[in-house]
Amino acid sequence: MKKIAYFKIYNENEEYAGGVMIADERGIPIEFKYTEPVKPTKVQKVLYGDVLDKYLREEVIMANLLSKLENRPEIYIIDDIENIYLKNIVKEEVVLVKKTQINPFKEVGAYKFVKEDEAIIQIKEGQKPIRIMVDEHNKEAILDNFLQIAGDIDDILEPIKRIKEALKLICKGEL
Image (cartoon, rainbow, N blue to C red; front, side, top):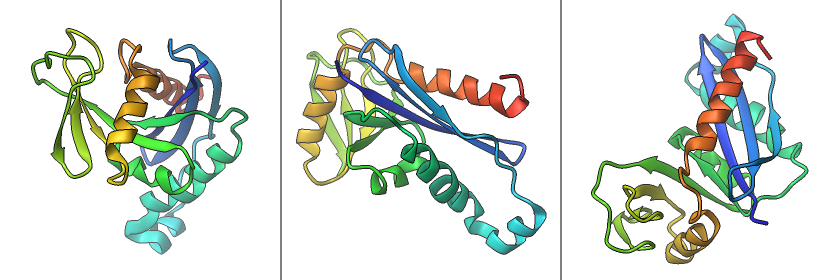
C-alpha cells in the first residue's frame, strides 16, 4: 500500500492550525494529526515581528506535527510555498502541487520543466496537467517516483481541501 502525506497549515483571524493526513493511493485516510489552534499574544507579535509567521509554521506547527506521526509516507504533498520548509524536516520527498489551466499533454507521464525546480506534468489522461515543484537534485527521479505513487489519484489536491475544512472546524471549536 502506498502512503501519501498531505500537509496543510490553516491561518485565519491570527489563529494558526496545522494538519497532516496520511492516506492510501485512493485517498482513504490512514492517519490524521493536527495541532490545536495557536494564537500569538501581542508580546509575541512585537518580539517576533516579521518572522512570527515563519516561526509558527516551522517551529511550532511542523516540528510538533511530524514528531507525532506513527506512519511514514513515501512522499509529502503541499499546496503552499510557505510550507516548503517541510523538506528540511523530513527524509521523504516534499512536492508542491498546483493546478493549471494548460491543455492536457498527449501522454500520461509527459512533463516539461518550466523552471529549474518546477515542471508541468500530466498525471491523468484527459485531465489538465499539474504544476509541481521539486528539489533541483534528482528532479527526474522525483517526478518518476511521484507518478508511480500518485498517478492513480483522480484529484491530487482534494485531500488537502479536506484537511483545510477539518482545520477550519478545529479553529472554530466545532470539532
